[in-house]
Length: 336
Image 1: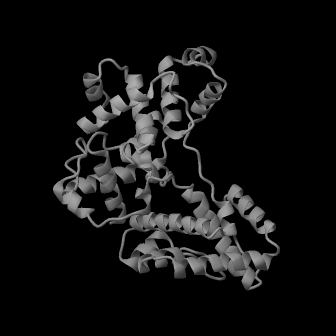
Image 2: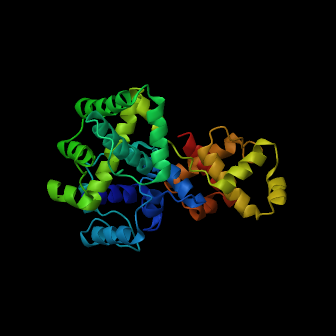
Image 3: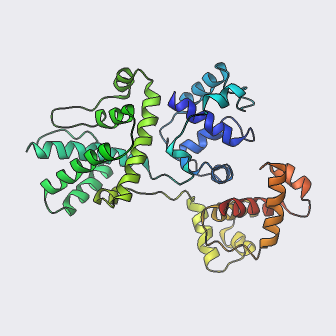
């Protein structure tokens, strides 16, 4: 039930103000202005892009299950029921930290490949079929191994990091099982999600997402202990490529009107870029567009109404444009 609890938690955070598909776009890591705003408005940053491989069909099936079990009111009105709130009362997840997660899937693949390398190297076995065929992943792993003083040193670093993580971190028995049994080693294949689900009397999708959380914990452990393996961790920038181009012009001192002209885009598109940048870049300068006092005025109204719905806020703040309200929300929540 791990994934269902995760979904109910997401819907609870969204407070019925977004569609039933909103959590899907958060989990997939959709780089749209709306989703990037939502992860900051509703404190969902830690969930962003943790499931780029999640299919729309699987997601919708899980949501329909939540509705049928009485944890959501309906797909059209995805608010959490009283029973749904009780369902997640004791649910704690690392993804709720509101800190952007690294690219979990690539790192998981690197660990699967490294554990296979380490196990075979320690048994002096040089001939085996790599468990991960992704060329970029293989290249990154080989580069890391070559940076070590020797193959045996690299193998021992991997072995010790896994052993110490299991021994030192507070993991449940199911989390330990998911982490260890997923690894491929010398003459030993890692279990599939279906096999792990059977072993743990769970569902494949729950095993997948709980394992993903363990990977996130492993990354955090490597960072805290300053382990050499942490060099393989990459934190992706959620900023879209087109917003990055707009940011370049901003840094050169261009005004909004000048950027619209030079990029030959609609003003609304550039305004969307401003919102993205304000949401994600703590150094963004906004005073020429909106004063700090105006930001505070808009945020006080937001808290008073307890909503992020732009129409409701604009009705109360007709002196501000929708763009200014969106900008204030991005800036206000960034510093909250």
